[in-house]
Image (cartoon, rainbow, N blue to C red; front, side, top):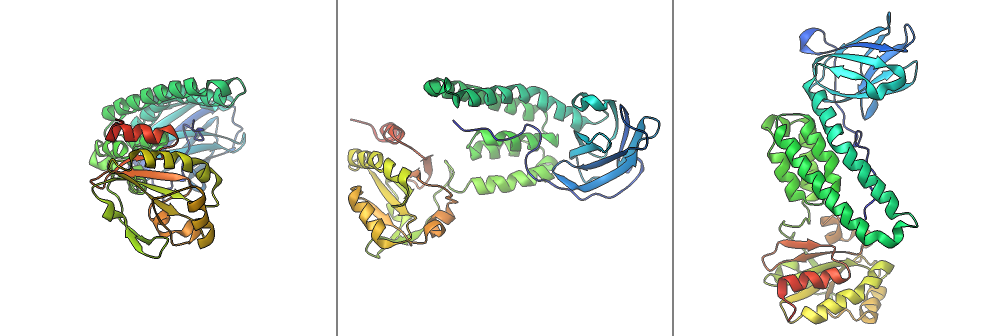
Length: 367
């Protein structure tokens, strides 16, 4: 099961340029927060770039005012210098009021920003789910959970399905909210389905799609679509063990498993018997394998092919991690594979153990 490494609030290093402006053309934050020392420093920064200060002021008679201008709604932090604490807010050029106690900044009340309201809705909706996933992850890695991994994985999958359903409901209700693409970025870590992610983004308003977070997500989608299930294969040519060029598209009309591996990769060598078994079982049913090796020397590569009885076509440029095909498909770890259909579309990825034969049975039949 995947370990969840993200915070529900702060993720990637986003940034904006800002300039000081007054009046209703910019933001105006009026704060009343108890527990702050007189004339103590209060300043607003980008939530993921502490060096980007948008406004600064001092506490006077228990109050403070921050003003300035931002390009669009985004995540920011109100920093309270005297107590060395901060509070995250999601605002644009809004007039907002902030109230609460410096000892409990998580409970600060922020009024006057629809973006902040949506951000709070996001946290209230999804924080409980994330807490449950993190708890499952911790249990799975505990001595007691080691023997219950299958059931934990099933529970986790069901929980993720519920989260994605809640995500669809959230963005459909908030198509014009700048928070929606941010939510898509956060929750994209729960699914590898880049086509579904692209569909979710395209359902948002054009303005939001072209927002900072929207553009960031567009770039992430473009990167993730490389080699993604449901997309077209990216053709390549590389030499086989005899020096003869082999082109991926020459396998059109067949199911072909493009298998990234190397002689020096122990997990790859451990997985090879599963690939051999699948190849022998389905090679007469319009299926084959194309091995792409990330080796850097010819002899170990050829020796491993012979030792592991890998009797299909193999190619390599012997450039190690800089193998041209691996770079083209953004391969950063091995073993890794992708199953390409007769029409040249990728139908599955990273099929391990019995999963490979199960998928081939589904596609080609097991009789």
